[in-house]
Amino acid sequence: MAGKDYYNILGLNRNATDKEIKQAYRRLARKHHPDVNPGDKSAESRFKDITTAYEVLSDPEKRKKYDRFGENWQYAEQFAGQQGAPYGFPGKGTHFEFVDLSDFGDMGNLSDLFGGFTRGFGTRTRTRRPRRGQDIEYATEVTLEEAYHGSTRVVTDMTGNRLEVKIPPGVNDGSRIKVAGKGGPGPGGGPNGDLYLVVAVKPHHIFQRKDSDLHVEVSVPLTDAVLGGEVSVSSLKGKLALKIPPETQNGKVFRLAGQGMPRMGATTKGDLFAKVKVVMPQKLTERERELFRQLKEIQAQPQRGEK
Image (tube, rainbow, N blue to C red; front, side, top):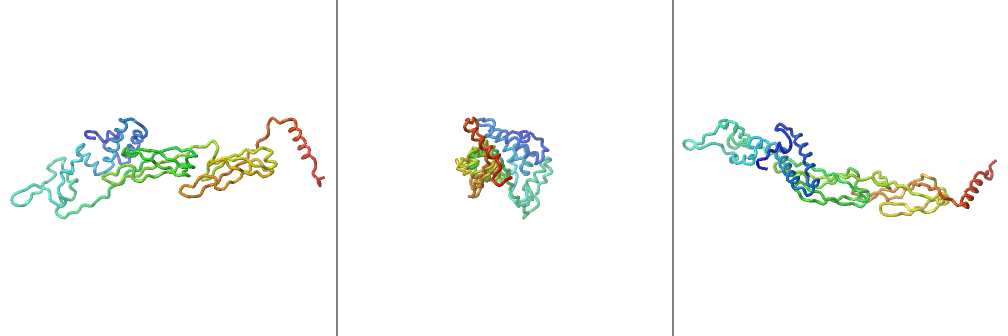
């Protein structure tokens, strides 16, 4: 990064706020991330420059040094003396004469680097807790089958390492899978942020999902709906047999307990709700038509006891 302008790399002016720095980093990191540009070495190099620039400019102390010393900001600490010792040059006799840093013109702000050292012996400086790095999010899509059985995705972290992230069974639309410590670097040596895999579940052509429950339509022949029978119901673990009682009405819903989606982090499952769709017969033979006519006539006759 030597000789490179950190502000220019992030597309910012030198008066940029912390919020603007963070927004610029997020935008550029997503654009140039190795996962988005597989095999593109220039994008990988650009991504590293963006990360380094953000690490410096997001840390107030590093940014302050960078603004004063430019590309040599990392060597500013070489000017610092031992904590608690006065700064000066040997004077006459055995004493020291303190240097007035204002004599150095613009370099007078080096006193900020020296902290309380110039205030005399025994002065303590307050230790600042290193700030935590930024959390990073990656979006991914899974099928309903993958959400049912569980799956994995491979992502690249901020250091370029490839990670296999496990997606647990029962994952829902919008679920965030956390990988601790694999996010952005902590400014000033602070701990890394976390990496999150944000999951979107694709719509299914058969099933509708509501939380951990699944809903499906089941076709029932008219004869089975009238007389009773057994039909096959689709589920995410295979076909299930469903008994249809006589005189089942169109739209009737049957509940198959425990045949829905796994509940993430639990051992239980939701339910499968099968809605009956009565299928009318087609291409009837003359014999079949005659039987339906007879049925119609029977149903039209007054029942015994009716006037």
